[in-house]
Length: 287
View 1 (spheres, rainbow, N blue to C red):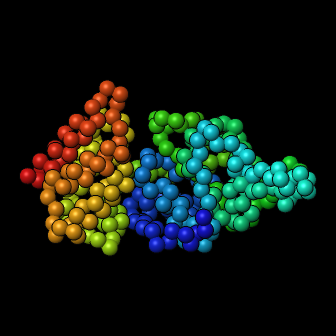
View 2 (spheres, rainbow, N blue to C red):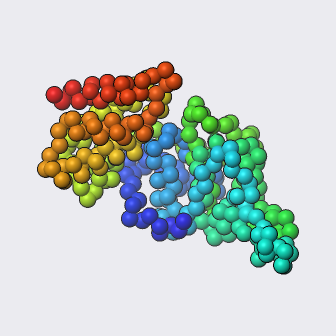
View 3 (spheres, rainbow, N blue to C red):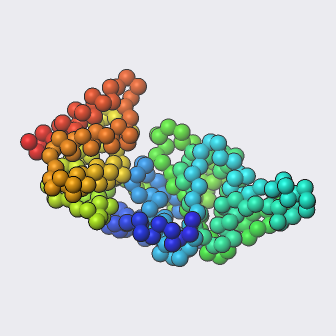
């Protein structure tokens, strides 16, 4: 994806932890260190990296890692049809996103890197250490000087995560933590992502209260992300635009619909009942 793509949709609030994280990201890259941004889903890890790519005029490529991803996808493969006609030549080699990003000097974002198998993790050692990669039958591919590798990772306790190999951990030199933002920052993020529609402060407060209480609920296995708050706010703003106002029960209905997809209960938990209890508790504060 080119750095220009998504410009209209890139809405970033660089305040508090986000300002500090962005500056550390910039500083790390300026001195040749590889950063990794760590935090729960939906706190803005990817957005910071996209902003960096846009601000620096670099092309942007991202790959979501999991246990099924193989190094060949990252590096590239030979097209058998061309190989039959011309043999193993540069023309027959179809570059993967990592090699492509290296050559064009872009930003490669390794999403959820701690879900990758050790085999796939080890394929990154050479590009990170040598800024090059040896492709059999083709030769060594060198990265442009503007090439940047940035990773994100979810907390280790989330299902599906793996430990980093010692060799890869040694190359991820700067760890940048993100968590859920403070109240004022999150409300600003929600406001920005509702534009061009808007919501009154009292409605925003109700939405934030629901989000906060859902995050505190210990019976929910997955915390509710910032995206959930944005979704509830957008639905509520649309409701106000259509009907001229909104009732607590409408906000509660939207919250329930969003939470059903954004969170999950423990195996023995009645998720819908728990969500209803959380939402009713939040709305009770407003009558």
